[in-house]
Length: 143
Image 1: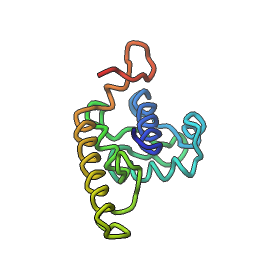
Image 2 (image 1 turned 180 degrees about the vertical axis):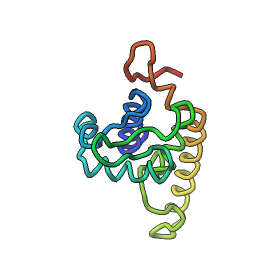
Image 3 (image 1 turned 90 degrees about the vertical axis):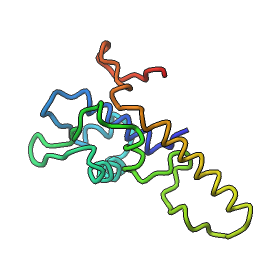
Image 4 (image 1 turned 45 degrees about the vertical axis):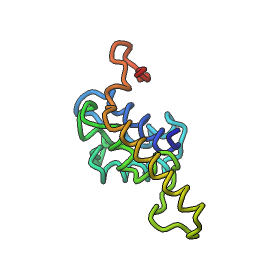
């Protein structure tokens, strides 16, 4: 199960994907729609901007818009831009376990395999697949 940050980021990007071309959306408008705080969304969008998935526009009428077409944005790229471990939701580096016990190392290896496999599953999935263009609203498309 993806963590909450990944879920919110995908919801936000899906919302941006429905905007008319050359239009942007302020995070102050988007945050209440997603049920998250503005500061929470700002932190997510900083990572998404660094990952080159969104562009920002300053000033009146400013806000965020997709930097790429929805077909070009893989869900794995979203997870990687956020620096998230897809299954665990941890932001800490995975290479240095707090205790070098055999059990901890075994679980760490297992989580690494699960995360790698989750990213492999997400890689071919595109943001555009989550949009139901016929109904004009965001909806998950069954695989």
